[in-house]
Length: 260
Image (cartoon, rainbow, N blue to C red; front, side, top):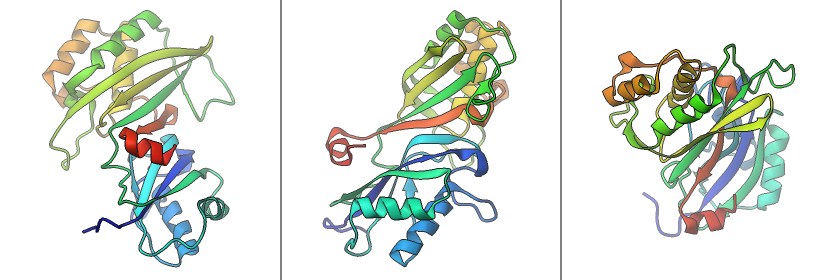
């Protein structure tokens, strides 16, 4: 139970997820959360549990993750010094972009109103992008890809496009943006924004869009599978290495204080 004068700390984080079993703390495997909590313990001298706005899966990256923790005592170092100290202890594939002290009990996950992901696809092989994009093996129709993306817009049941998770009872998500862009002649990316995402949802949605764009299924069949809200009509998931948690959105009053 937090009192009105409870203070908290917010962190803006970027990481390369290649070497981690996702964001969330694991019993036997390495995670991004464990690395940050371990570094905080070295600096603050006590165990600190942090909450993230989005629990990214194994191999997924982020250039805009937000996490937070409640301050148990008055902060003794500046935001800038905490940023530097954390980056000193963290491995070079995790970096704290910014630290912000807040005079209220901010919760990175529960206070968020939307999350945004980007999925990157390489149309030709690239030595330099192979860890951070999916080299597609098929010839695809970009107009069909874009048309398929519109099917996901709105408040819908995404049961068909998520992995089973017994903790999740509600599969309704409100997607407010879903569009493909040409980064250059050989690379495209999807930007998708919603109030929430289910486990594995973005990667399965991308897999479905690719199936339409390579003319394996029709737009009509995609719509039928979505309307069925049934996991047995799921699509193959695309690889994790092309997925980035891009940005977390908060109510305007909080966003102004964070300045993330």
